[in-house]
Amino acid sequence: MITYPQAAATPTPDPDEERRRIQTARLLAYRDDGPLVHALSGRLGKGLPPVPATLLALLAVAVITAIGLPDSGPMLLLPVLAVLVLVLPTAPRDHLGRLDWLTPPLLRGTEFLAIIAVGLAADAPKWLLFVLVYVVGYHTYDTVYRTRQSIWPPAWVFYAGLGWELRLLLIGVGAAFGWLTLVLALLTAYLFVLFAVESVTSWVRLDKASAQAGAEAEQDLEASPEDALEAATGEAEKA
Image 1 (cartoon, rainbow, N blue to C red):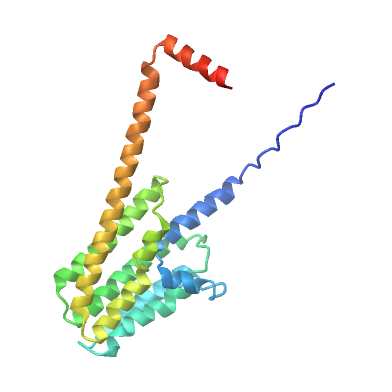
Image 2 (image 1 turned 90 degrees about the vertical axis):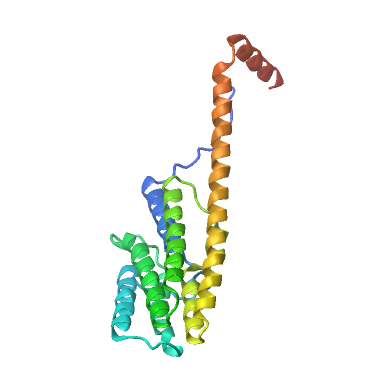
């Protein structure tokens, strides 16, 4: 009896493991970590639990804001440093805890509160603060919507977008040296162009691919039985 070699069976991925992998990838994307976080995350050990640390950072910024910040000087870096010290060590965690889905909204709220607190203390234009918060918020919304459609933004966008940590550092240093309005203007313009162009380009590319796939499917449906038989025969002869 002739026996034929059997192809090696492809191992079926564990559904629970796959779900955990996707959940981790989504939450890490929603965090919007930048190059500094990625450079340091491997040196921070196991890291801190993300929800308690991020919530503590939010409370710290709120308390510092309530106490009051000077209108100039290095003390304007205090909210930024509080966020960095508390949130940076959470990067190595896998974000698979029951409440870890709260980390991205807590982190985004902390970032926005720190931007507004430093900006108002340094007397930056309020409309500029609003536009910056809107641009970063749009980027977050776009990331969430895309990943829910299983369309992942390219990794370079998160690096080019500087991440929450470098954005806050630039704002804090700019405020401390009295350059906040200029830093806000340049940062807002840069992020607006980056996020808008990348988002529009990606969605246009997706629409073109979807339209092309739809046209090919419609063409297949409209093909006559004779054409379909001829095409099948030709493919069989080539094989």
